[in-house]
Length: 164
Image 1: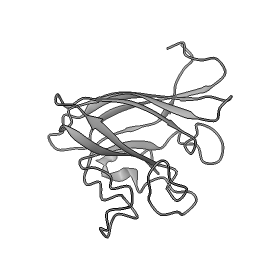
Image 2 (image 1 turned 120 degrees about the horizontal axis):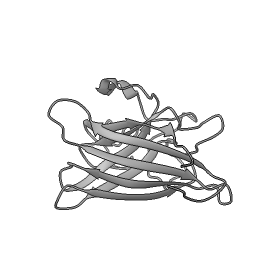
Image 3 (image 1 turned 30 degrees about the vertical axis):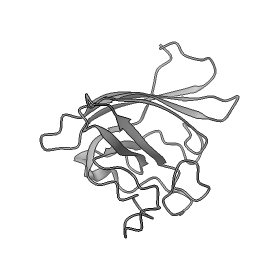
Image 4 (image 1 turned 90 degrees about the vertical axis):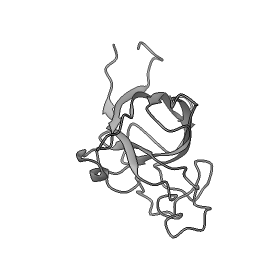
């Protein structure tokens, strides 16, 4: 992927969270230095149709499947929220939508996630959840920490992508 000049690039290969999961995909990250946005593009397959919580988690550790990726990446100690909220974890990217064939085509532009600096997401994990993220508005005891998004069914470690 030749991509745009001047920006940092990352990649994550998504695989199932353990058990009989068939979740798989690939994501590309591009940080545009002229706008400050980081773009997330890719595809994840093997999902149930509908909404799935989609987050950056603190640790790039998959030694125990997706369960060892830790909590949502939250360096500012905020409550869980929607990507458009001021009060949100850095890693709160909302939901992805799988079509009737279980495929989610992903395109997200976000100002909070970064591929550089003290709060870089490089070396951390991206996680796909079984259930929809309620964006901190569900009233469930987990709404303000995880969005009550359920089990971790797919994940991948975010690495630096080469220029070629």
